[in-house]
Length: 391
Image (cartoon, rainbow, N blue to C red; front, side):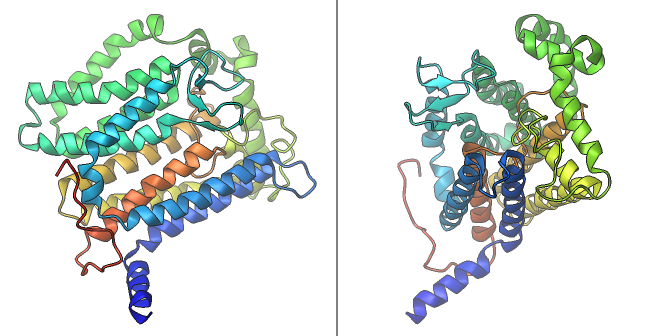
C-alpha cells in the first residue's frame, strides 16, 4: 500500500500542474458561460452545458491516462494515427454518416451516430493526429529540410487534411490546419525565403480560390465586413455579438445576467460567439483576463517544448500552441467583426462535446511530453517499455 501511495505521489508531483490547472480553470469558466447562454432561467443546466460537463470530465480523465504513457510509444504509432485520421475524414462522405449543422445542410462536418442525436466532429481529433504525424515527418527530414524534394513532400502532407476538410465544407478548420502547418515549418527551421515564395503563391491564388473554392455564403461573409449595409442578414450575428459586448461595459452585467445573450438574440452565442457572452457578463475586464489566461496557457506549452532536447517534442508543442492560439485569434476576430464568420470555436469555452474532449486529448499528450522529458527518475506507475510494430 505504501508503495502505491508513493507512486501516486510521484505521478502527481511530476504532472505539469500549471498546464492542467489552467486548462481546468478555462473549462470551468466555459461551462458557466454555456450554461448562461443556453439557460432557461429555472436554475437547471441546459443539454449543451451537461454535454460539456461530461466531455470535460471525460477529457480530464483521458488526459491523465495519456500523460502516464511514454510519449515515445505514442509517436511510434504514427502510421496508425495517420490511418485512423484519414478514415475518420473519409467517413464524412458516406451518405447518412456525414452531416452538417441545421444552418448548413450542404456541408458534411459531423459523423452522426444513427438516430441517437450524438455527433462527432472528426476534424477536431485530426488536428492532433496531424500535429503528431507532421512532427515525425519534419524530424525525419531535419538534415534536408530546405531541399526542394523535402518541401514538396511536407507540403503534400500538409495539404492532405486541408483539402479533406475543404471538401467537407469546413473552411474554418482548413484555416487552422494551415496555421499549424506554417508555425511547425517555421519551428523546424525552414528558411524565410520559402515563406516569402509561399506567400506570393497564396496571393496569386486568391482569384482562383474566390471563383472556384469559396461558396456563395463564404463570399458573402467576407463582403459583409466591408459593406454591412448590403448584407444585413449575413452580418446580423456579428453585429448582435458586438452589441452584447458593448452592453457589458467595463465590468459586465454579472454571470447569468446577460440581457442580450441570454435572450437568444446573438445566434450561436454558446458556440462561435461565446466571447460575446464574456463581454456582456464580465465586461472588458473579463475579455482581457480571458486573453491573459490563454496567453499563459500557450506560453506554458511553448516552455515545455523549449525545456526538452527532443526535436519531435518541440515540434509537437509548437503545433499544439499554434492550434490553440490560431483558434483564439480567429474566433475573437469573428466576434469583434474583424474577420468573417467561418465556424471556429473558442477552445475550452465554446459548447461542444467533440471540441472539449479532443482538446484534453491534446493536453494529455502535452502532459506526457512534460513528464517524460523531465530529468526526474521514471517511476513504475507509468506505462513504459511497450513495443510496437513500428519500433
